[in-house]
Image (cartoon, rainbow, N blue to C red):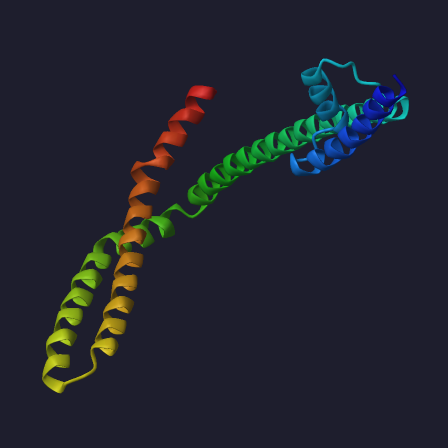
Amino acid sequence: MSKVKEFWGKLKTKFKDVAETGSKLLGNTPPGMILEVVSNMLGKKQETDPEAEKLLTELKEKQLEFEQELARMDHEETMELAKIGLEELKLNYEDKSSARNIYSQSKDFADKLAFSIMRYNLIGVASLLLFDILCTFVAEDLKIQYSVVAGVSTLIGMVIQSLLQERQQVTGFYFGSSLGSKSKDEKLK
């Protein structure tokens, strides 16, 4: 009988070594779990190591604390983002409100500026388009490099885009957001 007990003792030691190696290979699966699976397969009850059980319990407690701390930090971050969003909305409203106040104080100048933009921007856009076309034809005759023509065309395109955006902003101010905000403010009163 002593040879059988000796054999099982050696086998258990080997299983523990295999379990620790398997733990490393299987992404830190606890060696006790691997040992338990192998013991169950052989029909033998594994002997538990009290120190390992204590460490495993402490590890589970630390993991729970860590997860709770992460949840708390996530909640705090969400609340901070909500505060920032609320502050942004307040600033946006104050900005629109001050824009209406400034407009009411300098209405004549703003109207003249808007009239000039609406009247002369299209003439500027058309002139720039004609200049771009002219540059393309002249460049072919003068044998100017294509990269120079492309650079000039890109620059002209950017200026045209800026002029058209000015028109869009004036239209938005008079017929878009300004009237919509004004009517919304009147409804809120």
